[in-house]
Length: 441
Ligand code: PMP
Image (cartoon, rainbow, N blue to C red; front, top):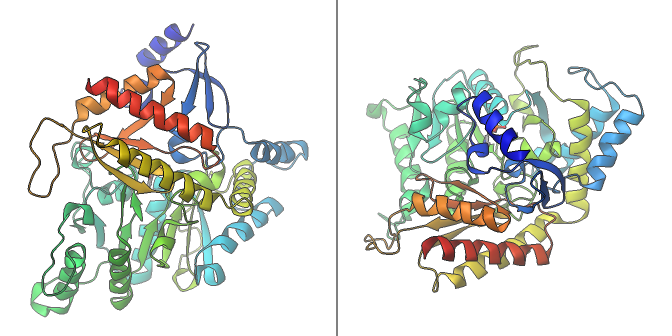
């Protein structure tokens, strides 16, 4: 009885549960992009475990890898002891890292959430530099634990929890400019970076370089906003000039999601530290940080935790990483994503509720706006969160699972598996456009 189960969990579970409120589905079986509900219906899944299922649900190579560990009677969890399974995971991941990191990186296994890995990266940067400040960005999402939340841009998540964020310098993420002009020959999007450089250089400013700068190559929860390549490069140059490690939070963008293996690859930037989770565990809980060897300055036991590098997750992750690399799924993600985005852009003429189409690869966001309101000076119309919620409900009725994000909760976010077929992509496109048309009618 799916209705009874939904009601029981709503009564028993924490009031903080979120997805379940808006997606009243009781998944009982799944394969690839398809989720079968206890109600007998089948759904196309564009949420993919919040982007953690790069190969979709129960991909044969992942199932086989997990089964192999179990059948071999390998230990299920051994803390951070050395094992052949960990060795394979480490070698596979380090071999796929960008630029110098591929030759020179160290890896630290973190608690299984992305948030814990963010904590670890910030902590390591503080230990390594002896400084405590942090530069983070408006609209950023880094997780729900203390330091990660302090770096997160969303005030409504931070304020009630009284999370201390003194020491976090929050700079505007380029989307906040939409400024095509620039000052003194500096492009609009780079002005904030240049501003910080001048503050660091001005002894009277009192501003000194912080311990680190943390950035998402494409903001996900913040509304699917790609960092402009030139901006990311100037940020990286600033970080290098002031010996301030650049932490790329690739929890969501990593492993082919954006149409390159890593989100930073679009700009050709090699960060000092990368935070990885979601896809690299093949759908099982796993998170790591990787960083240049010169930052390996932990004291023994400095960032411990019980569940670090779980054997089943490492085996699933190795199988996933190999499959992504061997089947060029980053490229496939780019091709399918480019096609979908251009089709959504074409539909904007018919559907004025789509205010903007953004993303990279199969990380796609559609701004839903109030088509009846006047545009501001930069051409943007007001966000329409109510409409976005109706679109999500219409989509579910039609058999499509999608979530929302963005500053106003008005960005429809698509995170399908990288293994999505062209036919499935066409179905997603039609379902999304039909849902927007129905909800805005
Ligand atoms: N960083 C980014 C960029 C994320 O998208 C997320 C999760 N959406 C996190 C960190 C936090 O990861 P977790 O939910 O596993 O703690």
